[in-house]
Image (cartoon, rainbow, N blue to C red; front, side, top):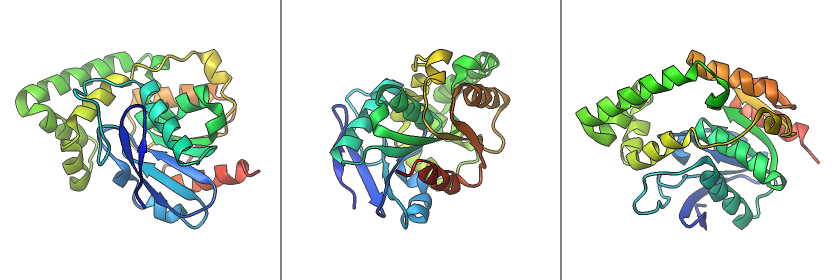
Length: 249
């Protein structure tokens, strides 16, 4: 089924599969809930899998005008969704910006979180090499916007990541949300001490071909989280299953 739930001032489209302990999937930038296919189906026999479109993507609303967001705002959307669907505590799985959303939920709404699978978490504050890499990427995005408009810039950004045609088509329609997300990458305030205090079972996934500055960010996060393990990039479903087993009541 696909209920509409109220986030932080916006309606969010959510999609459920299966029954059992709740698992919340938080998609990344230039994507939506469809990007998790076929993960919900793979887990439906053992979990209640909830995927949703973050604000500005797919069937979810966004404020007007929508030019900015923060990790905290995205986390409040997710917290409201979990409460409205009576799905807490949930095992979280988030990709890139979605991984930061999961971490913020664990930091500020610990009672809602059972564990977290973090895919390519862009914790760039702890990766010194990220400064130059991100500056270069921002310059490229600005150039692409001038040449091809916002939707064309998103398409080129995804092209560098070898995204499929279906995802590119969906993302072109959500260009405002992508640029709001991109600016939000630097909005999560966290210290090493706060990370060390996040006693949440976690599995961290690094995608094949991750750039060096993202690799550095992932390594820094694994060193700080007290209960984190590295997971295979080809087995996100397995990482979720392991955490379900580790955190079983």
